[in-house]
Image 1 (cartoon, one colour):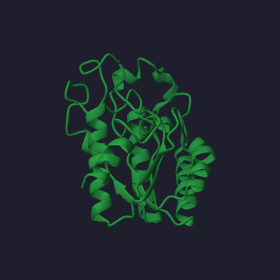
Image 2: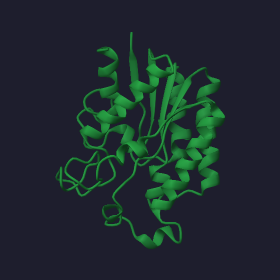
Image 3: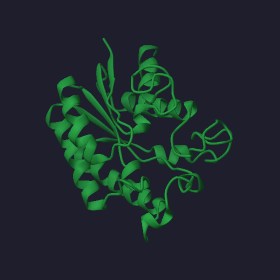
Length: 215
């Protein structure tokens, strides 16, 4: 029987994922763990993280799950609309390392850590860039397709894309999928979506669950 758990916490950086989500996920004993982390480390001006610390925490998260017998999928950080992000965060908080460059650097770290830990890498960043980020048909929630001046969280189509990419990775790599733990921040949690915080509705865990139950 398929069981998916959504452990995502809004605002979580890698440090909080390691401290709070990993212990809960280990109790669940997942066969497969899916991690999306780094948006807060790079874009949230209140949670900015040195890249060496980010890398160390990413390793710690994945190795804890791997050592418990879980297979791993690691996703790159999706892109965002800088002009909308900077309506909520002061550009000066980023110093000489703007959020666009922080995300690019973090995604290089993510690719390297995936290779070293044996995690399957799913490149959300490139997939989201196939549509204009601020357009009505964007994969991101923005003023042209919603009531929100967001530009960072996926919309329903974005979550559907994530679920499809994850399904492809699971099938392509013949990964176990009876017990899946989804770890991360508000993107994993499912901000704005029906079923937020669960593996139901329009969240990516919810849409992945529907795909796996209807091959």
